[in-house]
Image (tube, rainbow, N blue to C red; front, top):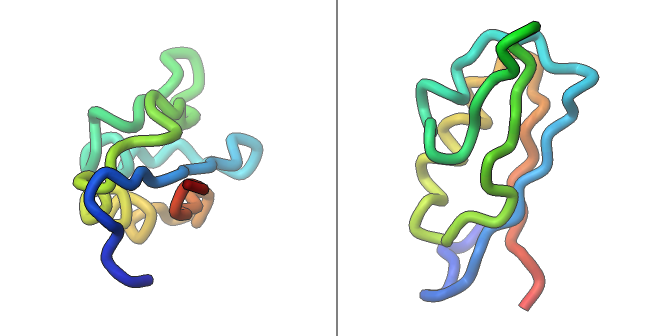
Length: 76
């Protein structure tokens, strides 16, 4: 994916049903992801973070052992 335009936002989706609660996303991007206290499943804090968060969010997605994080460019 090409670098986002300034001011563009990302769109993130997670599949909570497939989450294995490893927590790598929270370590990589705590401002975007959290975990439910009762079972550790991912909680998406910001589904449309600014484009400046792209590298951090992509790292979190790559670290996810269950591959439940999808990163897209939000529609303009």
